[in-house]
Image 1 (cartoon, rainbow, N blue to C red):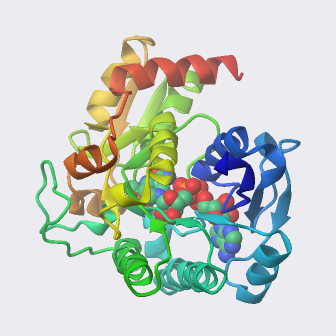
Image 2 (cartoon, rainbow, N blue to C red):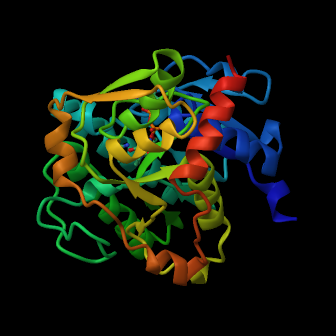
Length: 318
Ligand code: NAD
Ligand code: AKB
């Protein structure tokens, strides 16, 4: 089996996606064959499940040495600065998001790595993109530094595939909702916070207005999409920038109503802040038919299914 020969490096493994993706990859390749790396300390949920190294993605030399010493064959690069944090420090966001990716792509080319995974985001789309069922190829004029870095990154991936044959694959994730690890500074983070506050406070103050619809996805679907994309035969991957990916679409008012089915006394209020302008610049829903046709993508969770699972797991964890 080819899985046995692979040695995987997950960079940004202590983050919202990194924790769950690392655990899922360890189930496939074995704990010892998936190295978790991050600038911050090892997440508690990863402890004891496999090796962890402290790594700054900006240190290309250290990254290169680690890849050689550990005979790494695949990299999942998750380290990035997200939309809301990026607007607070645009230079840092651009620098980290671009240089981190270029460091990985360069080493992947030099060392002939089997595969690289790097996520893009719905943040590539801007106010001039279609709001509903935003297609794979359309007008793309991002207005956040995060979106600009993701769009530029998509074309670097495409370039390294076409010019050097690096097998780099990518998904434009929507906002991700999870109960295992906290989100890291995005505009869609409200959809995670709301579940915690619903259980703890029975109320939530939303930083987005009640009718702000955004594309979202429950983490189990996102992890499955990532693994299905990475396991798909190479000839099926026809998009080498990044695939649109869709799960569900809802507003703060709708997620609150979904929670009220389980916690009738839960109340929501609205106090939009600077993240409202970012949300308003993004599409409300995504057309992912290209991913569905090319490698068979199909989401499983809808809003009510996610709410039930989130509340059950958060309650069990208390
Ligand atoms: P996160 O902020 O939760 O995690 C990122 C991790 O990277 C953190 O643990 C952080 O410590 C680490 N990191 C930061 N700088 C680093 C450095 N210099 N060297 C090594 N590690 C460093 O982010 P996430 O939500 O897990 O996102 C992962 C990827 O998925 C990012 O590229 C993000 O843009 C993308 N994405 C996420 C979402 C979402 O909703 N979570 C949606 C679309 C795209
Ligand atoms: C963010 O809100 O910045 C992220 C994303 C959609 O990329 N969750």
